[in-house]
Image (cartoon, rainbow, N blue to C red; front, side, top):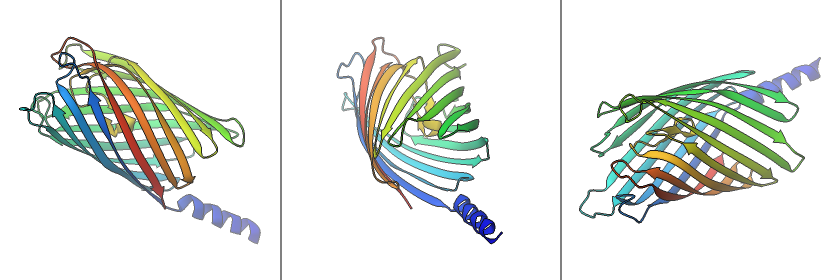
Length: 278
Protein backbone atom coordinates (compact mmCIF):
# COMPACT_ATOMS: atom_id res chain seq x y z
CA UNK A 1 0.00 0.00 0.00
CA UNK A 2 2.83 2.38 0.87
CA UNK A 3 4.50 1.63 -2.46
CA UNK A 4 1.29 2.44 -4.34
CA UNK A 5 0.94 5.74 -2.49
CA UNK A 6 4.57 6.59 -3.24
CA UNK A 7 4.16 5.87 -6.97
CA UNK A 8 0.95 7.92 -7.06
CA UNK A 9 2.69 10.83 -5.33
CA UNK A 10 5.64 10.76 -7.76
CA UNK A 11 3.27 10.62 -10.77
CA UNK A 12 1.20 13.55 -9.46
CA UNK A 13 4.35 15.59 -8.86
CA UNK A 14 5.58 14.85 -12.41
CA UNK A 15 2.28 15.83 -14.01
CA UNK A 16 2.19 19.11 -12.08
CA UNK A 17 5.89 20.02 -12.41
CA UNK A 18 6.23 23.31 -14.28
CA UNK A 19 8.64 23.53 -17.19
CA UNK A 20 9.82 26.88 -18.55
CA UNK A 21 11.26 27.26 -22.06
CA UNK A 22 13.00 30.15 -23.82
CA UNK A 23 13.49 30.18 -27.60
CA UNK A 24 15.31 33.20 -29.14
CA UNK A 25 15.29 33.27 -32.95
CA UNK A 26 16.31 35.45 -35.86
CA UNK A 27 16.74 35.49 -39.61
CA UNK A 28 16.67 37.38 -42.88
CA UNK A 29 14.29 37.46 -45.84
CA UNK A 30 15.18 38.26 -49.46
CA UNK A 31 12.51 39.32 -51.94
CA UNK A 32 12.48 38.85 -55.71
CA UNK A 33 15.16 40.98 -57.40
CA UNK A 34 12.80 41.90 -60.26
CA UNK A 35 11.00 45.18 -59.50
CA UNK A 36 8.05 43.98 -61.61
CA UNK A 37 7.53 41.13 -59.12
CA UNK A 38 8.28 42.83 -55.79
CA UNK A 39 8.80 46.38 -54.60
CA UNK A 40 10.42 45.05 -51.42
CA UNK A 41 14.13 44.39 -51.05
CA UNK A 42 15.11 42.69 -47.79
CA UNK A 43 13.81 42.09 -44.28
CA UNK A 44 15.37 41.24 -40.94
CA UNK A 45 13.46 39.35 -38.26
CA UNK A 46 14.28 38.55 -34.65
CA UNK A 47 12.31 37.65 -31.57
CA UNK A 48 11.84 35.37 -28.60
CA UNK A 49 9.27 32.72 -27.69
CA UNK A 50 8.72 31.75 -24.05
CA UNK A 51 6.40 29.27 -22.36
CA UNK A 52 5.59 27.83 -18.97
CA UNK A 53 3.38 24.86 -18.25
CA UNK A 54 2.79 21.28 -17.18
CA UNK A 55 1.08 18.35 -18.89
CA UNK A 56 -2.21 20.04 -17.92
CA UNK A 57 -1.71 23.59 -19.23
CA UNK A 58 0.61 25.74 -21.34
CA UNK A 59 1.01 29.53 -21.30
CA UNK A 60 2.96 30.97 -24.25
CA UNK A 61 4.14 34.46 -25.20
CA UNK A 62 5.98 35.51 -28.35
CA UNK A 63 7.58 38.77 -29.51
CA UNK A 64 8.75 39.37 -33.10
CA UNK A 65 10.45 42.46 -34.55
CA UNK A 66 10.43 42.93 -38.35
CA UNK A 67 12.17 45.59 -40.46
CA UNK A 68 11.51 45.63 -44.24
CA UNK A 69 13.40 47.79 -46.74
CA UNK A 70 12.27 48.66 -50.29
CA UNK A 71 14.04 48.72 -53.64
CA UNK A 72 13.10 52.42 -53.92
CA UNK A 73 15.26 53.87 -51.14
CA UNK A 74 13.00 56.93 -50.87
CA UNK A 75 10.36 54.68 -49.25
CA UNK A 76 10.34 54.54 -45.48
CA UNK A 77 11.19 51.11 -44.04
CA UNK A 78 8.24 49.13 -42.73
CA UNK A 79 8.75 48.54 -39.02
CA UNK A 80 6.56 46.04 -37.20
CA UNK A 81 6.17 44.55 -33.74
CA UNK A 82 4.16 41.35 -33.18
CA UNK A 83 3.10 40.24 -29.69
CA UNK A 84 1.23 36.96 -29.18
CA UNK A 85 -0.26 35.48 -26.02
CA UNK A 86 -1.78 31.98 -25.96
CA UNK A 87 -3.12 29.65 -23.27
CA UNK A 88 -3.91 25.96 -23.68
CA UNK A 89 -5.65 23.55 -21.33
CA UNK A 90 -5.04 19.82 -21.76
CA UNK A 91 -7.22 16.92 -20.66
CA UNK A 92 -6.96 13.16 -21.07
CA UNK A 93 -8.09 13.01 -24.71
CA UNK A 94 -8.73 16.60 -25.79
CA UNK A 95 -7.47 20.16 -25.48
CA UNK A 96 -8.75 23.74 -25.60
CA UNK A 97 -6.64 26.74 -26.60
CA UNK A 98 -7.11 30.45 -27.19
CA UNK A 99 -5.15 33.65 -27.56
CA UNK A 100 -4.54 37.04 -29.15
CA UNK A 101 -1.97 38.23 -31.69
CA UNK A 102 -1.39 42.03 -31.79
CA UNK A 103 0.42 43.80 -34.65
CA UNK A 104 1.79 47.36 -34.40
CA UNK A 105 3.35 48.90 -37.52
CA UNK A 106 3.62 51.89 -39.84
CA UNK A 107 1.94 50.11 -42.76
CA UNK A 108 -0.40 52.63 -44.53
CA UNK A 109 -2.46 49.86 -46.18
CA UNK A 110 -3.72 47.49 -43.46
CA UNK A 111 -2.32 49.24 -40.38
CA UNK A 112 -2.33 47.76 -36.88
CA UNK A 113 -4.09 44.47 -36.43
CA UNK A 114 -5.77 42.29 -33.82
CA UNK A 115 -6.06 38.56 -34.45
CA UNK A 116 -8.08 36.46 -32.00
CA UNK A 117 -7.88 32.68 -32.15
CA UNK A 118 -9.32 29.58 -30.51
CA UNK A 119 -8.95 25.86 -31.15
CA UNK A 120 -10.24 22.52 -29.98
CA UNK A 121 -8.44 19.26 -30.57
CA UNK A 122 -8.39 15.61 -29.67
CA UNK A 123 -5.65 12.99 -29.46
CA UNK A 124 -5.39 9.24 -29.11
CA UNK A 125 -2.47 7.00 -28.23
CA UNK A 126 -1.84 3.59 -29.73
CA UNK A 127 1.19 2.17 -27.97
CA UNK A 128 4.00 4.69 -28.56
CA UNK A 129 2.13 6.30 -31.47
CA UNK A 130 -0.01 9.45 -31.21
CA UNK A 131 -2.81 10.73 -33.48
CA UNK A 132 -4.06 14.33 -33.16
CA UNK A 133 -6.90 16.18 -34.89
CA UNK A 134 -8.92 19.34 -34.44
CA UNK A 135 -9.77 22.75 -35.84
CA UNK A 136 -8.28 26.22 -35.34
CA UNK A 137 -10.39 29.37 -35.82
CA UNK A 138 -9.02 32.89 -36.40
CA UNK A 139 -10.60 36.34 -36.73
CA UNK A 140 -8.45 39.21 -38.01
CA UNK A 141 -9.37 42.90 -37.76
CA UNK A 142 -7.16 45.73 -39.05
CA UNK A 143 -7.15 49.51 -38.53
CA UNK A 144 -8.09 49.93 -42.20
CA UNK A 145 -11.44 48.24 -41.37
CA UNK A 146 -10.40 45.12 -43.32
CA UNK A 147 -11.51 41.94 -41.53
CA UNK A 148 -11.46 38.23 -42.34
CA UNK A 149 -12.02 34.81 -40.78
CA UNK A 150 -10.00 31.61 -41.15
CA UNK A 151 -10.76 28.02 -40.22
CA UNK A 152 -7.94 25.48 -40.16
CA UNK A 153 -8.78 21.80 -39.58
CA UNK A 154 -5.71 19.64 -39.01
CA UNK A 155 -4.53 16.06 -38.57
CA UNK A 156 -1.17 14.79 -37.36
CA UNK A 157 0.28 11.35 -36.72
CA UNK A 158 3.42 10.43 -34.82
CA UNK A 159 4.81 6.95 -35.49
CA UNK A 160 7.55 5.36 -33.42
CA UNK A 161 9.60 3.39 -35.95
CA UNK A 162 12.22 1.97 -33.57
CA UNK A 163 14.21 2.94 -30.49
CA UNK A 164 16.16 5.48 -32.59
CA UNK A 165 13.70 6.46 -35.34
CA UNK A 166 10.37 8.32 -35.31
CA UNK A 167 8.19 10.20 -37.80
CA UNK A 168 5.51 12.91 -37.59
CA UNK A 169 3.17 13.78 -40.48
CA UNK A 170 0.99 16.92 -40.34
CA UNK A 171 -1.74 18.02 -42.76
CA UNK A 172 -3.71 21.28 -42.48
CA UNK A 173 -6.36 22.95 -44.65
CA UNK A 174 -7.00 26.71 -44.49
CA UNK A 175 -10.41 28.08 -45.49
CA UNK A 176 -10.73 31.89 -45.42
CA UNK A 177 -13.83 34.10 -45.59
CA UNK A 178 -12.64 37.43 -47.03
CA UNK A 179 -15.47 39.91 -47.77
CA UNK A 180 -13.01 42.82 -48.20
CA UNK A 181 -10.81 41.13 -50.82
CA UNK A 182 -11.03 40.41 -54.55
CA UNK A 183 -12.54 36.99 -53.81
CA UNK A 184 -14.97 36.18 -51.02
CA UNK A 185 -13.06 33.06 -49.97
CA UNK A 186 -9.70 31.35 -50.39
CA UNK A 187 -8.54 27.78 -49.82
CA UNK A 188 -5.03 26.49 -49.18
CA UNK A 189 -3.22 23.62 -47.48
CA UNK A 190 -0.03 22.96 -45.48
CA UNK A 191 1.79 19.65 -45.26
CA UNK A 192 4.94 18.62 -43.39
CA UNK A 193 6.84 15.50 -42.47
CA UNK A 194 9.47 15.25 -39.73
CA UNK A 195 11.88 12.37 -39.34
CA UNK A 196 13.70 11.88 -36.01
CA UNK A 197 16.94 9.94 -35.61
CA UNK A 198 18.58 9.90 -32.17
CA UNK A 199 19.52 13.58 -31.52
CA UNK A 200 18.72 14.90 -35.01
CA UNK A 201 15.46 15.76 -36.74
CA UNK A 202 14.66 16.97 -40.26
CA UNK A 203 11.38 18.60 -41.32
CA UNK A 204 10.31 18.93 -44.96
CA UNK A 205 7.29 21.15 -45.58
CA UNK A 206 5.26 22.79 -48.29
CA UNK A 207 1.99 24.55 -49.05
CA UNK A 208 -0.28 25.28 -52.00
CA UNK A 209 -3.59 26.86 -52.99
CA UNK A 210 -4.37 30.51 -52.36
CA UNK A 211 -4.16 32.52 -49.13
CA UNK A 212 -4.35 36.24 -48.25
CA UNK A 213 -3.52 37.81 -44.88
CA UNK A 214 -3.28 34.29 -43.51
CA UNK A 215 -2.49 32.97 -40.05
CA UNK A 216 -0.09 30.07 -39.49
CA UNK A 217 1.89 28.32 -36.75
CA UNK A 218 -1.13 28.11 -34.41
CA UNK A 219 -1.52 31.91 -34.30
CA UNK A 220 2.14 32.93 -33.92
CA UNK A 221 2.69 33.84 -37.60
CA UNK A 222 0.46 36.37 -39.39
CA UNK A 223 1.09 37.31 -43.05
CA UNK A 224 -0.49 40.74 -42.74
CA UNK A 225 -0.28 41.80 -46.38
CA UNK A 226 -2.76 41.64 -49.24
CA UNK A 227 -0.30 39.59 -51.30
CA UNK A 228 -1.69 36.36 -52.74
CA UNK A 229 0.34 33.47 -51.30
CA UNK A 230 0.31 30.52 -53.72
CA UNK A 231 2.99 27.87 -53.19
CA UNK A 232 6.03 27.34 -51.01
CA UNK A 233 8.44 24.77 -49.67
CA UNK A 234 11.20 24.52 -47.10
CA UNK A 235 13.26 22.45 -44.69
CA UNK A 236 14.29 22.64 -41.05
CA UNK A 237 17.19 20.81 -39.41
CA UNK A 238 17.47 20.50 -35.65
CA UNK A 239 19.95 18.99 -33.19
CA UNK A 240 19.36 18.07 -29.53
CA UNK A 241 22.41 18.83 -27.39
CA UNK A 242 20.27 17.63 -24.48
CA UNK A 243 16.49 17.04 -24.23
CA UNK A 244 16.20 20.68 -23.06
CA UNK A 245 18.72 22.35 -25.40
CA UNK A 246 18.00 22.33 -29.15
CA UNK A 247 19.44 24.35 -32.04
CA UNK A 248 17.69 24.56 -35.42
CA UNK A 249 18.23 26.09 -38.87
CA UNK A 250 15.56 26.51 -41.53
CA UNK A 251 15.23 27.72 -45.10
CA UNK A 252 11.95 28.41 -46.96
CA UNK A 253 10.91 29.68 -50.39
CA UNK A 254 7.55 31.40 -50.96
CA UNK A 255 5.88 32.06 -54.33
CA UNK A 256 3.24 34.80 -54.41
CA UNK A 257 1.67 37.69 -56.29
CA UNK A 258 2.39 40.99 -54.60
CA UNK A 259 -0.62 43.30 -54.36
CA UNK A 260 -0.91 45.70 -57.35
CA UNK A 261 1.65 43.64 -59.32
CA UNK A 262 0.65 41.09 -61.96
CA UNK A 263 3.71 38.80 -62.13
CA UNK A 264 4.42 36.02 -59.65
CA UNK A 265 7.44 36.67 -57.47
CA UNK A 266 9.31 34.68 -54.87
CA UNK A 267 11.05 35.27 -51.56
CA UNK A 268 13.41 33.21 -49.46
CA UNK A 269 13.87 33.25 -45.70
CA UNK A 270 16.61 31.74 -43.53
CA UNK A 271 16.06 31.40 -39.78
CA UNK A 272 18.04 30.14 -36.78
CA UNK A 273 16.74 29.40 -33.28
CA UNK A 274 17.89 27.98 -29.96
CA UNK A 275 15.52 26.26 -27.55
CA UNK A 276 16.33 25.96 -23.86
CA UNK A 277 14.09 24.47 -21.18
CA UNK A 278 14.45 24.39 -17.42
